Image 1 (cartoon, rainbow, N blue to C red):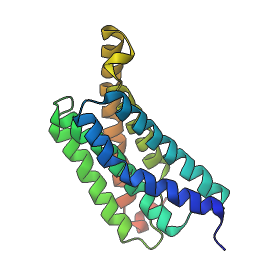
Image 2 (image 1 turned 45 degrees about the vertical axis):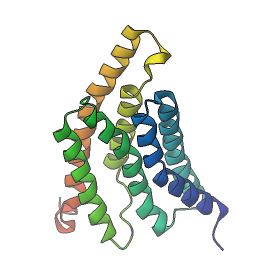
Image 3 (image 1 turned 45 degrees about the horizontal axis):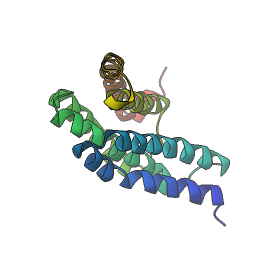
Length: 181
């Protein structure tokens, strides 16, 4: 019998996988407060599905495959919008999305779903934090406060990109060399 925790974890992952499109629509229609709250809900479901999977003594192979893809869909939408509005350089978003596609393809070929490494988890956390700050609605503070928050998010994007590339190298490193001293 499948644990109810595992069913809930998989459900939260599935919900997060479909939030990217509404998030992009909200950003495009300048509904920034709703977009920010939707991103927050997506981050919450990311945390909650991991917590629930651990309560079920491990997630499903299906969940291990879908969870990182759901993260990518959730994070890609605002990144595309930020590049389209010239708040981030297109090349940096392209590089990050290329990394995500590469790792998703690699995971698809793995029998275990290749769960996220600690580097990958830190990368995702930093990306969510960066996006929260860059997408902070202007109506939620003074112009000066919002400018500082947006700038902090922009500066946090770059270490997140670095962690993304570093974790990609760690994932793709041949198995035979990972276990050598």
